[in-house]
Image 1 (cartoon, rainbow, N blue to C red):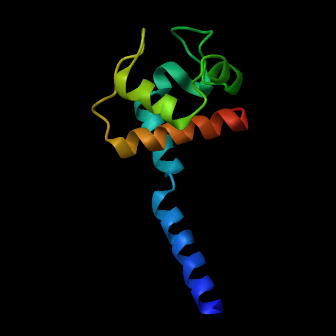
Image 2: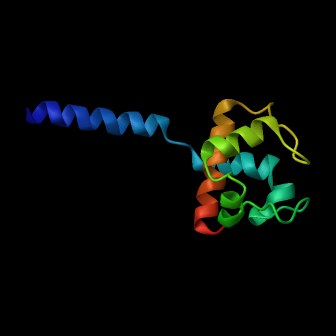
Length: 104
């Protein structure tokens, strides 16, 4: 029983490692594609729609799914970044949300 439990926990840990977002990669994607308008979590085009946690919450953009949709499809003045891979988009969305929770 103990070895079965060890196997299950090890498997879960390994799966989480594979599925975990790559925040360092997300930061690279952000720097190359987003920082011109969103440096430090700000927004040079629409100053009230920053990437700060309170603004993300107010605009229902405080989830990886919502941020990913915005990046993939664009909206208003923000262009679509559909040229990025799904993995790139997931990583940058996780990076943005993590930074917002840390206060940039």
